[in-house]
Length: 154
Picture 1: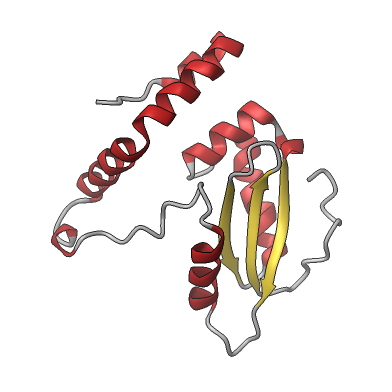
Picture 2: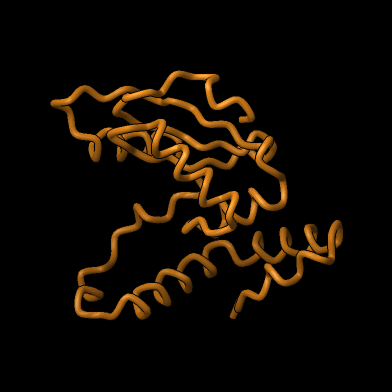
């Protein structure tokens, strides 16, 4: 979305979506100040430092203009943002969200690196064929992006 004023999100508490208009992939999040949160996401994406690697990769491939920021629902001060966000994640199945995956109880005593490795293996096992096909398709279009695909798939 090029125009930050397309929707007035000033001081709105609620649930939002960042949507790739080309692929349809999305990210759903919550915030007490949606406008500030969007600006934070956009700043990190522009710097190439967003914590969601798939979203960052698509931002770099498709460009900023391919993404739109949508207000899904306003949440009143007494309602739970977490509950509303969970409902919207369940409804929209956003592809960029992976933070809603809850760790197994046995991971409570593990280091963050161990937890990340468990998640990485589960994610790659679930989407290995799609990841490899997409990687090959992207590299066929632009071989210069190969540095972004130094991913272990085994």
